Every structure is written in C-alpha cells, then in structure tokens.
Image 1 (tube, helix red, strand yellow):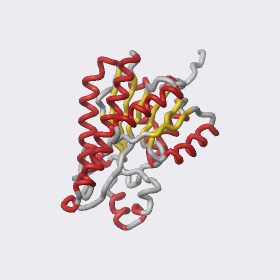
Image 2 (tube, rainbow, N blue to C red; image 1 turned 30 degrees about the horizontal axis):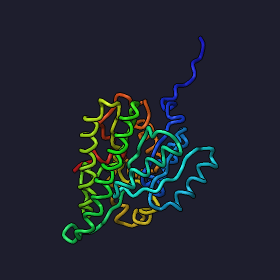
Image 3 (cartoon, helix red, strand yellow; image 1 turned 60 degrees about the vertical axis):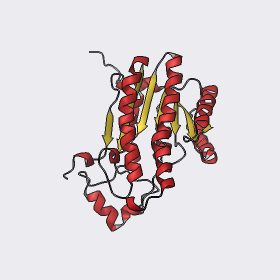
Length: 261
C-alpha cells in the first residue's frame, strides 16, 4: 500500500503576508516569529522601531522575509501608513494579528482618567482601528483574509486591580464576534485567541513570589503556559485550517477557564 505524505494543515501560510502589531516584545514578538517560521512574510509593527530592526535581523538569519513598519494603534493615520508600508514592502496583507496592548495595575477606586483612557484606546480602540483598516484592504482586494485578535481569559472572567484591561478585553471579544458577523460576506474571518497566564520576561519575577505561586496553583494544570504553547492555536486561526471558523474565542489557559469558582 502506497504511503501518503503527512498532511500539513498550515501549508497554505507559505508566502502569505502577515502584519503583527505589538511585534517588538512579549507575546507579539513570539507571534511574529511563529508566523515567519511557518513561511509567512511578516510586517513587524510597533512603536519601538529600533527593537523591530533587531528582530528583523534575527528573522533574516533564519531565512525569513519581513519588514519593520512604524505603528501607533492610537493614531488612525499611523495605522493607514503602516499598512501602506507593509503592502509596498511585502505585498497585500492576508493575516493580521492584533497583539498590541498595555495594562495598568491599580485598585479600581484609584485608577486615573488618563490611565483608563490609555488602556482602552490601545487595547480596544487600537485593535478596532487596525481591524477596520485591514478589512477595507482585504475587501477591496477580493481575496479575504484572517484577523486574529489577542484577547485574554480576563475578558471572560475577571481579576482584581486591572479594571480597564478586563473591560477592554471583554469589549475586544464581543467586537470580534460583531466583526465576524459583518465581514464573513467578504471572506474575512475574525477570531480571538484568549491566553491565560503565560510566562514572559515581564512577569517571571512575580510568578516566583508566594503570591505568584498561589495563582499558579489555581490553574488546573498547575503550571504557567509557555509562549510556544500558543503556536498551534495561532497557526490554526491564521491559516485555512480554520476556513469555516469565524467569530470564535479560543482560550489557551491550562484549564483556568473551567476551574472551580
């Protein structure tokens, strides 16, 4: 009996153009690397362009193709300019990963007006600006595309002292569903990836404390996620392997969402 080659469900990513916001650090950086290693040409978008150039050099050493574009998601003109620059350098953007985000940790009763507005404008309104501009280009190009919004399990359940962050992520989840409904007719899929607690350079020291370890014990799998454990979910939502999936919210959290209240 003739053996068949193993199916690669993500093979269609080869040569596609992805734009990743917040690509110069944290999970955004990891998402950009993952897509590049899957064969995408990646537009690295963010404000710290110097860090982006260093990441681009690392990608090129691995044989990947990409570019760096300056992007401030709070500025509509910057969003339009970033997409124009990405298209000029790499071609039509087929995939967008909305991962730019910030957080302010403070008791809700003490959060200042400018802190609230900054988080909402970046995490929710910024994602909206990027998604809308991407969709306009995808619609006009006639080939559709995939938008992956990076939400959080804190948009589905809450934690203390991050009121603006939880509100923004909850809004992003419902925005994802709304856009998926409207844009399906254009062949544009909009889904959300909702990570749980993942170990990064920013939070590693906290999770080494007693408070951090107590939080880890509340995760059913009793461990933090590692960035590479998001790869499968990201590639699924970005690729044609999820061609009939839109408006979905995919938690990747070690079972945290189903833990006992």
